[in-house]
Length: 442
Ligand code: PEP
Ligand code: MN
Image 1 (cartoon, rainbow, N blue to C red):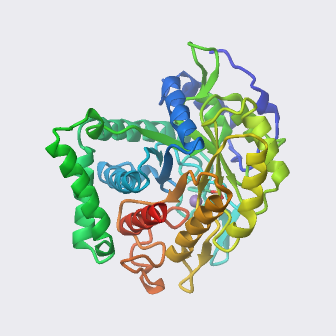
Image 2: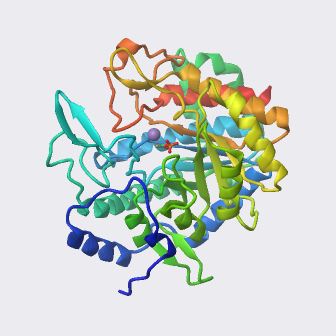
């Protein structure tokens, strides 16, 4: 196998593990480079085209999934629940917005985490921090916290197994729109959180019944287009999965359809942005509250020099208290520059706090308020609120407080299962989708 030296490999990269055994790393990367692609370049192009519609204001993007996927979460039940929740949210949003909803999971590759500290201390013991299952173990022991390159192969295999099941679920009839609507009806009928949305659910029911009566049963009801995404953090892994497309000679990162660069690795002169600039996948970049207009405009020049709608998605994560002040300037100047980026709202990462119980949590009200602020800003500027990016699970965990089936601080310990940030549970996710649907209609 020939080793290519890519432009980004000589630049500094933040948040990379210190692999103790370089020879083992080299072997692992050579193996990974010989493995088949997880996604095809043509699928990435198709997603870019779909996102182009979002950039033009003709579609909505729903991106969601775990903060950190875990190897022991690769089970049919977990994957099905997550997918089911995302599809239920998408069905509600499609009806309310009357535009296609582009569905992208934080799934099949979301195994690596940027951290604010390199170490973690518990009861006087200090160990290297957990960086995601792709790097080291969650368990708080010295052995488990040593970075192990073998884990990169496990990430590849876990991603492949997940994607295989996702493809089966989404094309095999399981995700038929009528089935998805029936699940939503269950939520509305059988949970206190859902009862508020009876009216909307009834309207969707009537729309489906009308089409049925007319004899309309499009193929589109039976299958869903669903895409994978993750943060492109561990550049050794992403580089090993970056391949030249035989059709065009362009580079694609075939580890996922869309990849994003996080708030902590988007330095303009560092490796992550250079990497993202060289691949043809649709790219996301997280923008926190300190992002300047100059940074945003330079990111556009670097990542979307041809101003191609759908190529670049800005995922803003300002915090509920800041979005109304910080977002307008960015959106205004970016729009004035002539760029057509997709704007989506991550209402999670600017709203994390430590509860009195010691759990890292988020309040459903803050999440909702940030999304509201996002809609207000775009509506005021006449730009398109392109979508939402959320951390969620299809399971009934207790990690975020609030929501229709209110989770209290005292409940957090009951099912606090995340390996990293707190996720909306199934009911909170559906609640959010119905509330965003109402924002769309008002
Ligand atoms: C994340 O999406 O899990 C994350 C770490 O986000 P950010 O880069 O916005 O902090
Ligand atoms: Mn997170």
